[in-house]
Image (cartoon, rainbow, N blue to C red; front, side, top):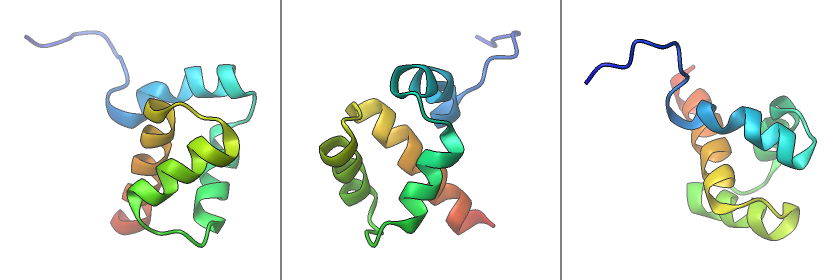
Length: 73
């Protein structure tokens, strides 16, 4: 079933609720992820959860989107 609305799919669909819930722009979260010495997906997810109080889904979406940019250039 095709969705005809212009909804954002994948990790980016979480971005509005992440900004609203945590009060920081997505660019700031991505900068944090990029500046972290950690490189593995789950390490970064767990770090965001432990250090910044993000929920698993939100942390996972941010990490997935940021790492995809890094590898996809």
